[in-house]
Length: 135
Image 1 (spheres, rainbow, N blue to C red):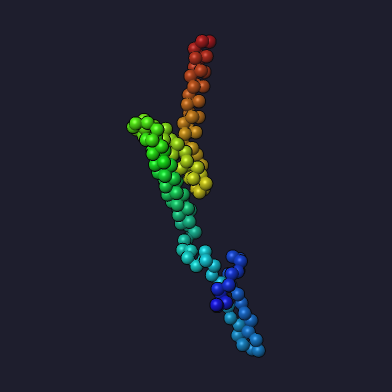
Image 2 (spheres, rainbow, N blue to C red):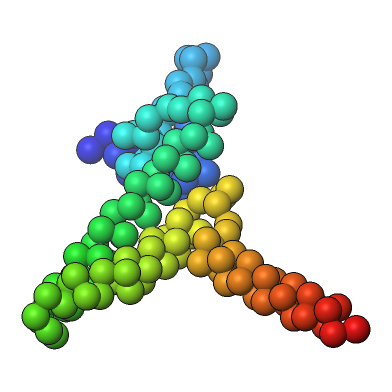
């Protein structure tokens, strides 16, 4: 068992052993399990890598959730997956957005929420128009 095979805290990157009696010291680099296989990515490309991974995780969650909902719909009624296609797709989309919000640093909106807000605003504008026409 070598000196570097022992477990050290993550903050320890190297160990310096001082020389004795005029002998030169030596440096032992400590590699943790995480740092040994970690690929180096330039600082400029880290954000792209993070966002790409977030998108792939969200896509995987969407297809996983949709597949499960599809099977449940088919078990409920004849042609259930076709009848519930829209509802199942929206539910799967919402579960994918939860994953995306947790892993992405730039994606923080929900299209369904935005749609609801637009509909509310349009209804308010219609009411205002009716009130203006009555006056």
